[in-house]
Length: 242
Image (cartoon, rainbow, N blue to C red):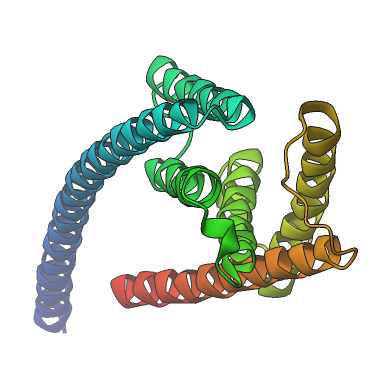
């Protein structure tokens, strides 16, 4: 009987040692995976920052070329608009450099591209004469504003809290944010037209409503994309836990 208990104790101890060894190996594997993930994220951040700088310089050069062209056409209003846009982009770049890129480089690059299409192509290049070009811009603005609203929400909730929010709330929040931002944008366009003789708003009384609808569509696109990415991230986390 004593020999049986001794054998059982030996077997139990043996399996306990195996379990401890397995747990240690799992901890090492998790640590290595975590370090690898950090390295990959760092490399991705450097790439996106590099892309942001390329886009920024490309848009700035395009703006300067457009300003010069507007100057040769004696269009002082558009020259002023061009310099105002350059000042805004310089302010964004200064904030990014000084505060260690508080805005995601992807978001900043999208904003710069929006400026390129709206000011360089639209205002300087006559793009607004193209049918539905203005609609495209408002959908585009809804997309990047929706993305910006998601970034703000994650920052306010310190990332972790946003992961626990239901999809229905996130979708409603992003779409509502895009719609509200579209309304503010229309007010700014109206102010610019009245104060600086811009021609941002169309003469059709339905133009404002159509613009806001287009912005809302952009918000819907962003909400759908973010919810898809959240679902993908959750499935990957489940796979890692298994």
